[in-house]
Length: 273
Image (tube, rainbow, N blue to C red; front, top):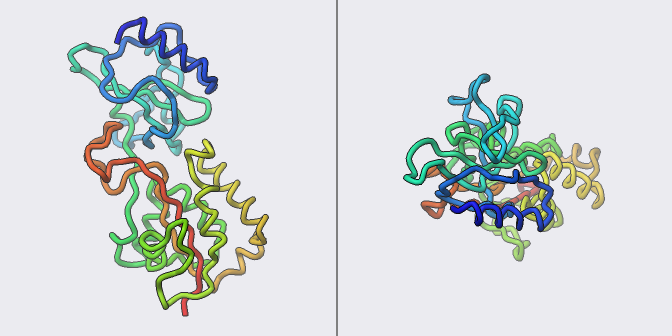
């Protein structure tokens, strides 16, 4: 990529006013995948790689790759969005680097081995409630799910209802195709997507959960109401701009259909008959 082209693209980014400052002379990069634009719709979600990140070397560099600006050890629970993969050689040999952002106030360059790609698991791959609950509580990709669970502290997470939420519901279908459940809270289901969806809100998981709580309060599901719903089961399927199953590549590309970063925010509350 020529200096003129890089400078032109960088200036375009500044023009659209996304609030991210790019250095005057971006790093000389041979782009493998992605580009210099910052449209969040195409970003892929990553977290730090616990096996490779060490206190003395896990740095985020400025876009010139000349100055250390952050240490990943200070952001162990942060989701990082990768926009581009590149090398610094014309032959594509040598270390691969990512251009990353936390989606708010940090943008920089990082060695690709320091990050690992988030992914979601479909409910149908689990056998028991306990297995699925463990996944929701521990998977890095399930920050939003954990937030939703905290909003309904006494509603039992049901694998069966989560499978239904994943397989049978869509925005135009409010009928639960299962005779084992009643009193489906369709208002919550219909609006969960628009409140939690990442591309539209451009907010972190914590901010989106706060918005979801405000929405629930506005429609009569305040803290006391939610806490009283112990006779309801909770079905969840959250796919927050990630692929399904272990990725076939750690690079920010889609080698398979499952690698594609996609979204699904299914929150289903119902009573079992």
